[in-house]
Amino acid sequence: MALQLLKDGKTFAEINSDEPKICFLHGWGRSSNDFSKISNKFESIAIDLPGFGKSEEPQNSMNPKEYAEHLINLIPDTVQVLVGHSFGGKIAVHMSFIREYKNLVLIGAPLIRKNPQRNLSFRLSIYKFLNSLNLFSDKSVEKYKNKYGSEDYKNAEGVMRDTLVKTVNEDLSQLLPKINTKVNLIWGENDTVIPLSIGEEANTKIKESKLTIIKNEGHNMLKSKPDEIIRELKEL
Image (cartoon, helix red, strand yellow):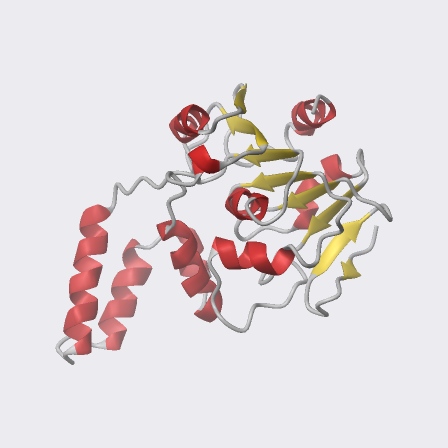
């Protein structure tokens, strides 16, 4: 099915129904195509998030809450379930505080921030401070970022790089206990991007949640184990 342009004139989505019941939100650096083996089993809308796939980049950097506030106006009121993978899971949580949904399905989502690179962040803050005093060049700061930053960071530029920083720095620990929607957490047993321990901790914080662990799978399981996810969605 061809991508359709949504009413903001900038965002594209795969829509297979006049009254979609499920909205799929993909991860960082990905697109709606990640859900191609899943979305066609349901009346659904799968969005290319702003800055990804065919959708235009936002004019200014956005945090996950701002993504949620933008998308909520583009998604039909018929949607009852939000399915968010990774970055899309963070957005889905924020959307659930704007509009009531029947279920959230969060797949390998970075809900709780762990910062093993605290020393690197501290050093970067010092370099930025020295840069503000003209004691450390812009080029040197950028070189440090490119040397120690993640692959996602290295591949992002401009507005999207700033958006990534906002996303990575956000911790939803305080919001999780306030979620009033039923939540299904789905995690790959061998996820090294967002470890299973994050899903286990989130499961203890959310009032009404269920954790499903997909054996022998990592972070990107949408195309390798679609049947597992389809099964969970059909049981909602």
